[in-house]
Length: 381
Image (cartoon, rainbow, N blue to C red; front, side, top):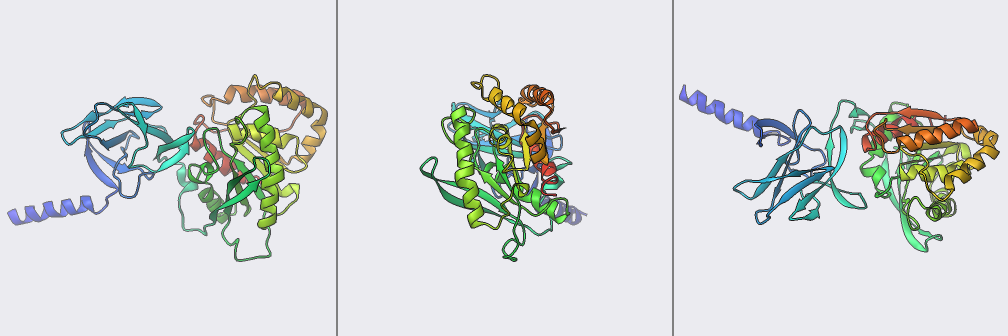
């Protein structure tokens, strides 16, 4: 009997270790089973996501006097006898969250997490799963590539870069040309955002495999140009960069179709403002516009008013040229919701045709991933 009991214990220990992603942790409340976040570095066990979507964070800093977790809300971490600081958060909403560790007042990225460019700096991130995330899961389908392309900007007089998604099979058929979506990130992020935080390649791989979207190139643009993303001078510089540098480079070096019905322009937050500015007055270049979690800001030195005047004088042309003017928000909790509603009211007065959509979640990446998922299905058909 003792031998059987011993063998049972050994088998139990082995079964707990056979899957390093699911482990048991002792936190301030009780012992719970959790799953390592997919955004962790390699085999890092923490951050650990509990079944109720709370998360456990660890950091080893034996000499520190005070350690906090900044996850939008700040949490004080508690040190154990081994010099490891730990905290369990409140239940977190689905999707991607930036976070920072504050060690004796100094903000650092968590060495256990992948880092992402967001909040205008490198930050840690945690991915909280949810039932509806299957559309950007890695599946057994044909996968495209994400390529990085450097180009010289005649606008900024510097070398810049774009990230480009090419669909599966792009290199196989050298005679096939593709439509292209130019896609912009939000403030505090850069051209990497849609690829890493946004899961663009996985979303398109799955849509194309299911024949829900046309095979297309997606050019992920760096919208950080000029002296600030929302100023009129920066918007003008962005428009010039797009028309004079990015589109010519893409159309010269990649197999893309070059007429307006095969070009789309979209962006989130700051990128949505850039889409409005560069897209509405250039409908001869783009037949599809997507504005995610955005709307004209007040006090932009008359930029919105000037566009409204242009739209008033060109409403028939805009409505004729645009096959889709798709505007989406993350519900009433989206920080851009009020500005967007004011803008849409103005569009109604000007008789501008558009499609409006909401997906709950506020001003966050789960919303924008869902926006891309839905917008991509409307393109080039």
